[in-house]
Amino acid sequence: MIEKTRISTPAGTFDALASGDEDGREVLLLHGFPQSSLEWEQQLRVLGGGGCRAVAPDQRGYSPGVRPEHVSDYRLEELVGDVAAIADELGWQRFDLVGHDWGAIVAWATAAAMPERVRTLTAVSVPHPAAFDHARATDEDQHERSRYITTFRQAGSAEKMLLADEADKLRRIYDWKVPEDHVEHYLDRFTQPGALTAALNWYRAMDLTGEVGPVEVPTLMVWSTEDNAIGSAGVLATEKHVTGPYRLEIVEDVSHWIPEEAPEELCRLLIEHLLAHRG
Image (cartoon, rainbow, N blue to C red; front, top):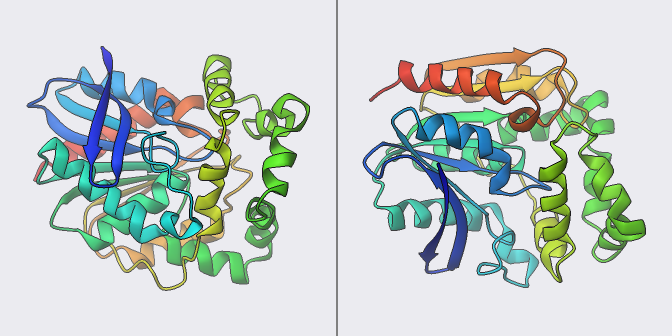
């Protein structure tokens, strides 16, 4: 059973979804854009029913209780600090970390910065930030795929564009691959005052150059062949940035929205990864 909960930290109070017994194996799941903790619905059910205590917070800007106004408040170091603060409040000294899209970037950075606390890392869709940044700069395919980032960084005009015509362009981002009830939930959230700006501030504060070092914890990278935003260049280069055990899994004929479009496959891979690394 999935429960709603709240997690108080020095930065504010995060809304979250959780599943499983309190004494289960600790798993923290970080969502991407433009989503929320709901994207992990199926993974929460499987993990919670499989001996884990799985928690998925609505991250900074997505939780109304942690929605600072300044772009600088959404720098990667602040997002990593939130992960540590949430784990502290949960009483977790060590935990498994799972992230998709922007959540994957935060997860990569957290694993690199706090290997003593992150038991395993599972990154879904987005490769190591250094590999991704290099691909954006040198690979024509990834450069083209990433053009939307420039649009999202334009304060005011990006919000207007995405929310026009009853949020038609925002709806189209999900590419009809995400369950309709999830889409309606997301749209309802992002049409609330200030919510979309807070989420877009992640892009406006983005600077991945040199920020994330190598990752030494056991790492699973999951990428899908029909991902419109992330090409193969950065994914294939990610192995160079992981010094610990590393596994790349490529899911065929699935779009960027792996947790919701292929939940069974992702759950299978995730459980295999956790069972292989119990330390």
